[in-house]
Image (cartoon, rainbow, N blue to C red):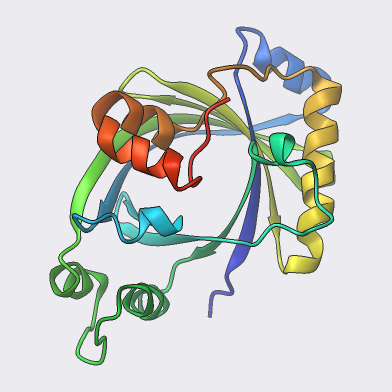
Length: 216
């Protein structure tokens, strides 16, 4: 049985020499990866406007659900760059959570593909990412992503087992990003923000208005 983990991630703009910066900080190169993400929602954007992201990464369905921010966490302007998501992989759990959000009967649904039909979920984004992965001390992973639509972004990530570990992870990532001198600027946005800004401005605007996505 897979237990959901909470992903805490801190975005940054990858510089030309970011590989060297990471290696000099004690990072170990792990792997090069390539994968394609396909995201779905209904025509009212019922999932994404609630900050829930249902995607198929290659052949596996995943649901990313928001985790509440602690009242004692970092300042909002910093916290916008450090996101927390519960990652759900088992299809029965994905079906249950999405059905509850959308108010549909899931009793007859046997797969996420059934759910797509029942909830009228359609593809709204699809792109391929080439990723370089590094492991750093303190359980931190660094990834450098380059997409087939021309966007590049870096992330520092920590996977947490429960909510009690989340704010400590946020602080760790903020301090590490500062210590490494990782660039934060107007283009410090993730792949989905960049994709929608470029390909679906109306959806992007609604997500900004709902404070699901942020511009820096």
